[in-house]
Amino acid sequence: MLSLKETGPEKRVHLPPGTFGIPALRYLPFLSRDTIGFFRMLHEKYGKTVRFGIRQIAIHLITQPEDIRRVLQENNQNYHKGVFYRELGRILGRGLLNSEGEFWKKQRKLIQPSFHRQRISEFVEVMAEETNRMIDDWKSRPLLDVSKEMMHLTFAIVGRTLFKAEVTSYSDRIEAALTIALELTTKRIKKLFPAPIHWPTPGNVRLKKAIREMHSIVEELIKERKSKPSNDIISMLLDARDEETGERMSEIQVRDEAITLLLAGHETTANALSWAFYLLSQHPEAYEKVRAESIRVLGDRTPSLEDIQNLIYTRRVVDETLRLYPPAWVIERRAMDWDRLGGYDVPPNTNISICIFNLHRNPEFWENPDSFDPDRFEEEKSKQRPKNAYMPFGGGPRVCIGNVFALTEAVLVLALIAKSFRFRLNTKKPVVMEPLVTLRPKYGIHLDLVST
Ligand code: HEM
Image (cartoon, rainbow, N blue to C red; front, side, top):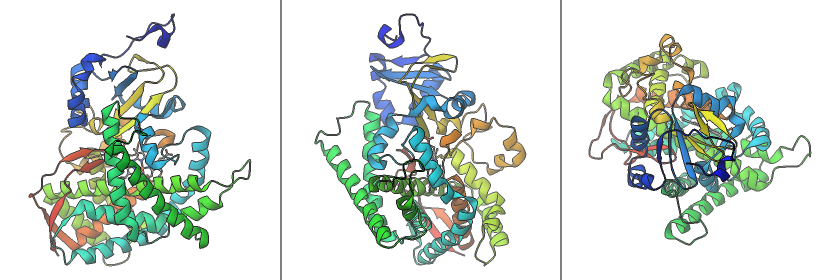
């Protein structure tokens, strides 16, 4: 029940079913052990819209496409980024993922041109070069953890395309710092009542150290660009002036935008590719189709954006991977004002969770939802699904700015690797999902490679 203070005396509040207060406490171990399973259990027990929480922290879990559309599109001004992003904000500052309102709009307008089709088409050559460099290296390595390899590769690609920098020399440091920062941030999110960040707990100390490390790496990159401008995103951000005031962006803001793009631009795509290799290891017939298509469409020449658009089956494999293992597995918001979702009231300050993982496996929209079937993305079949039943890149005005970049990269990397190798999953390490801020394979994906 809401208090009068919360609702106003005249309002009768109709809240979704669920578990709240003391009874919800018993679920905390389940929540932290298996967040996705926990969300699924709540829906099975209470229905399509569920309320969960303790004291002031109320979370509404929504699953219906029309509610998702309302939150992300129709009434998006009412829904700001919530707790999840506040925690993430320690890593990303006030970069594009985290900012709000007019400030976000201005930054998005500024950064958007770096993702125009023309730019992506220029990036394809670098994407192919970096992938081929990795393929050469793989020829002497019959066993590898493909998820680590993909992190290195996508980091190098985002570094060279958006930042015109050979950032691979930094990548081990930034990756280590990022992994620690994401793990500790997720632990804080899951705790519901984390220790205040200024308390010197071991976790807080490690988190702050990892963030300092990331800041210093990106500050090095900014320093390089200040002394030697180029046509990259950092130089563009350093040069940009506010249309009204004529002021330049602060260096801290440039750093936050750069960290956001570096991190959002490599971690998600690397996870998508890792899961694609896992799925293809379980479906060799699909891998053979990817291979045959790649040999036919790409031949031995340097690929162009047009070639990538002709890799139709490979694209379906990527789409199906993003359905089964969406790297951004949950989208989260906080209501600013009253609203209604799923026929229930949403009081201000309610957190909204859209579990993309469960949405993508909802049997209402997907036949045999847990099975791998790239052909469900044939054009005709896709048209028959509600629009918001599939949203690996989110939706509305805050839709992923890098979606075309990511899809182009993922299709190209898969196709180039398929031309050069066959592989088997090495089963010494289990394949386990780890839903941190992104959906990672907890112990990596280990492959035995065979050159072809
Ligand atoms: C498979 C790869 C990717 C996936 C699944 C993905 C997913 C997402 C999702 C779901 C959102 C919306 C989050 C929300 O509404 O709260 C988002 C936003 C964003 N993504 Fe991606 N992303 C991917 C690749 C990329 C790449 C390659 C870049 C940049 C190079 C990028 C940069 C961003 C940024 C900056 C935002 C914030 C946009 C804004 O709020 O205006 N992402 N992404």
